[in-house]
Length: 113
Length: 112
Figure 1 (spheres, chains in turn green, purple):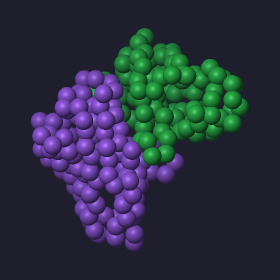
Figure 2 (spheres, rainbow over the protein chains, first blue to last red; figure 1 turned 45 degrees about the vertical axis):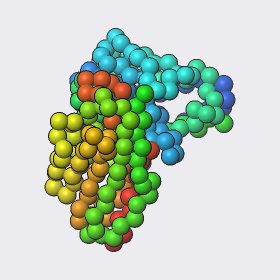
Figure 3 (cartoon, chains in turn red, orange; figure 1 turned 90 degrees about the vertical axis):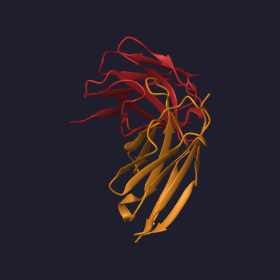
């Protein structure tokens, strides 16, 4: 059972380039999330999708877009990458909202030069 | 909005000793408090959680306590082992909501 799978694991971009981070879960969960993790700041919510067909902003949505492609997949897009977006990005999923355990992927380490 | 503060940022203990990590939250509407453990190169994994209608919860060597009045909650690990070495995050959310606010993390070192 794979759980939450993120691709790629590592990526280096130049300022202004675009890219999409992919996330897929095989647990039939309704809700999915994107976080970024920076040193000394814990995890901060970028966007979430409460259920298929819906997406909402989290704490730090600026500079990102998301797509809930279907129940399994939730992608995060950087249209014009900036050095401030250098971070480790985690995707997570849960059965439902706040009471549900969130299951995290292994992360994508992104560097923007 | 909600803010979660976590202390200490680094904690070093001898194997067999206890470790305590403390968190405070600001929004009295928060009623769900999970704790996550993150090992090197991996995503966070839930280790224990507590709801606001409970003051304490225990699972083998791990326990969590909650003081709603003071808006404090703490993680207690007894009989620490080297494999407990990791980064631990506390978090707060409103049950039924989707926005979980995480603390900055505590890096725990257990020395053999």
